[in-house]
Image (tube, rainbow, N blue to C red; front, side, top):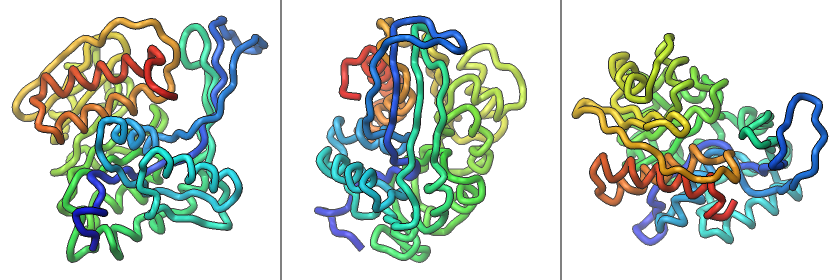
Length: 300
């Protein structure tokens, strides 16, 4: 097992890939062809969370699949340069490095495609550092926080929910996108999982319309969730647990980008709680981090 000098503060399990994002201040109706900027940056939910955690002073380790192609070598080097622990990545010569492509216009996200096929194909192989060491085993499970994203397959998420190697983990789970929200169902009644969702994702999990983040958090708690943290764009967000509901309104900012805002929110909330913040403070810090990201005040 790792000693205190090499043991990460938190594990980030899920997508680690290249984001290719085109942004324009213009409106983007279907078929539009407008000028803008296109950038390739390190991304993926797990990596976005890890990058924010590192900026907040924590030592995150990445648990994912990255190819040994030139794109993968460049991505791992970029992650290491940011101070992220890349020693536990599953590296395959047979699987290409995953990618995410999005277009953002004046109204926010226009469309996106997530190509996480290599992560899905790698499956349980990415978990070997937790099931066979050095991060843990079934007999000596990892005892610490884990940020988990829904880009993993439902089968693998179900395995994580019940595997003894995660029996002592503080699981923080996000769906990655509304289309993958139902992959969180194995954690809805989980005794150690906190769900991070937006209101639309909460509606999919609850199976009914929900008018506010507070109503959404209460609905997830009523369905058995240990804790639920729900955002609702510029409307009030809510953190709910058996102790009650806490709500706060996001700061008003000019929107420069939207991709990754939820990841920044989740990372800041986790970091605040690990630092001992109370529920009100943790939610406020999370909303401030998301607002700074949306406004373009932190590196993409």
